[in-house]
Image 1 (cartoon, rainbow, N blue to C red):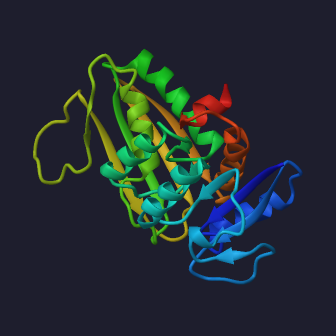
Image 2 (cartoon, helix red, strand yellow):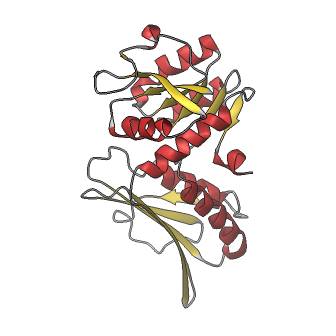
Image 3 (cartoon, rainbow, N blue to C red):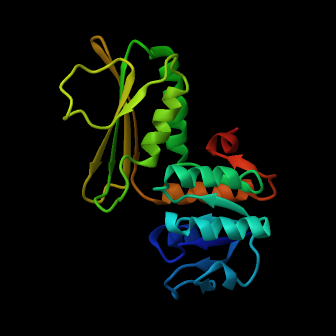
Length: 249
């Protein structure tokens, strides 16, 4: 039985994660961390110091501002952590990587199985089409999302770049520069509107033909399922940085 603590437990994702765990027999929620309280079938506390027991794994879907406290607790107690929050700075990502030298850390920009399959397909396409096709990424999210482009769009761009013979530059805005598109670039475009959960599209545009890879998330539950699977996978693992690629092997 894997004992799990959820940070951001009273938020939408936290509640979905708790619901998914309640239907499984291989794990359980022993506590949640949130500024709010109530409405849960497990204790909700306001800080890591108030946790009633040490968990096997923490699933984090809170906010980047909590990262310092999260990693400090996990490093002190040797607790594994699944990080599902987005919007981290470059410095914070480096902090996550450094923590993984001492504890098991599962970190990916998107917990969806489908998105990670899309990334693998994109790498194959880039290896075959790179240099002959222009590559563009379009991502769409709800109007409350703070960061742009999405972390998933960057993840997809890096997957593509890993297979290109010549690394491409990421171009986020073209309106200020009047010039032809370079062959050595990946365009990344962000759309924000309504209640779109998440859509990501990779366009390979060649001479007289276009190939498109697309993923649509219709519910945040796809990310919650991935996070719970990651927590079970991570339990008992040695220190290291783990991604969906390791879990899918």
